[in-house]
Image (cartoon, rainbow, N blue to C red; front, side, top):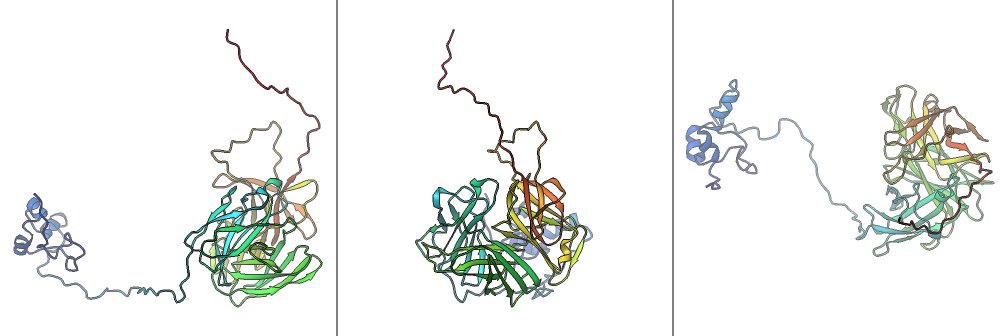
Length: 439
């Protein structure tokens, strides 16, 4: 029968939550009087230090109790937890329904964000493709919740979306009404001048209202809002951020009346957020990719580089796209390669995803007898798309990529020849029913 005892004190093999139980017992007299009934003594009939000496003969058995230091021998970090000075009111239900128009559902390009206190963007990721709900994280009453699902010019018209919606969160309201506007698909061009100055050009025809933009640095509560100057369909301006803005969100919207039932035209892009960019000071290996925040575009330097303070390279997303020639089709998003200084983007390779990895429910494509016509990476030279010599690649997760030599900062996209409709069709007879006869 084993009976619990607390008489054997001072042993690290005892109840470790007692401050005294930090050593091993060497004194045979104390061991027999205080620890004689322990399982260790009943089995081994010797003190703890006697056992240690059998295995480690070079150790010297102590003759007196070592009280140990009264404080750690080295300075350790002290952590003090302070309650928030202005605690928020977390939503009791963080699951939201997205009320898409015309029976549509979320595309693979949709994204959700929270704007807290008007000065900080909290990324909420993406709703599930084909779904109409999203589970938020840490949402509070008073947060501005937005979903942007604006994709323009895709090959497959079924995946194109021109929907967006925003509302200020409150308890008990867990439905976000989405607005559909097929004319809203701005091309957003963010061009850093230095680490705190960013020029922006938005190309979007509008009627009524001005376009405004807000730059949100990723990790600091220091937004910069400006009104853009309009010349035709182009709207330009310059952000002068009070802090470094080498990783940021850029919100673009029409300055017009809005409500939960009638949201203003709005969208948000980003560059370098979520550790997706290369930011100085750091050393960057030539084979380490710089990714876009959605993971579908990447840049690899042609050689190992050292980035100094304020230098960076990133890939910026954009919902709209520059005009595509009639004999070409756009696959996926257009991306802006940005760099400070621009020379960082001149020697590497740009790779864009054009086919997602297959899933267990998605059958492999049937092999074609004719050689597959692969798409190509194209570069926008300011007037038209220029095809680049391109090479197929396969990503770590099985996604198919197409890569080309970088042409420096600017816009890149994957285009492919537009497939022609067959001129001859073969029609099979329709069989309404079939009943085999048994013989």
